[in-house]
Length: 227
Image (cartoon, rainbow, N blue to C red; front, side):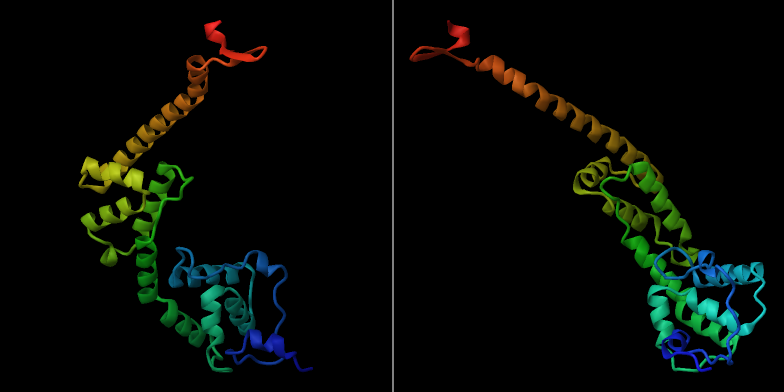
């Protein structure tokens, strides 16, 4: 029996034998994903997918290839579906096509672009941001890691203007010291904010003391403090 067109289109670049072997039960729950939006690399994804296939005892080539296609999300899936129909009929072709598009060079470019664009979220604690910054930095391959001075610039640029200005005034020259300084600045700014909030709470009381309420004495009004 011929398969419906929408089903075949899902695997369009693959030239799979008919009929297709049955897919494993509940596989979507554990299928590893590659979407280029996280720190996953092409090589790591292939290794993770291979382990997944072994763990669920996949024995048929068409199942392996179909599962791998379904593991691609977002831009990776779009690129796969743009390949010519029935252009891939063995695993090696599928793996090579994937690594040529998303392999080392692309991963390097993506990781560096993502690192350059890192920003501290407004509600994110500084210590959590430092952990996230350092994790992204450690994920950069050694040959594309920016020099120390450039890394410091990226770190400074990740903060809003108040924190950034305070950090620049401290003139630290190493990333370690910058990160220590950023924690200190966070504490200082929080302290200033707390004092300002206390002043705002006290101001209405002070205003009442300086301007007592008016007391109605028939047709005359006078300040309660001047009776």
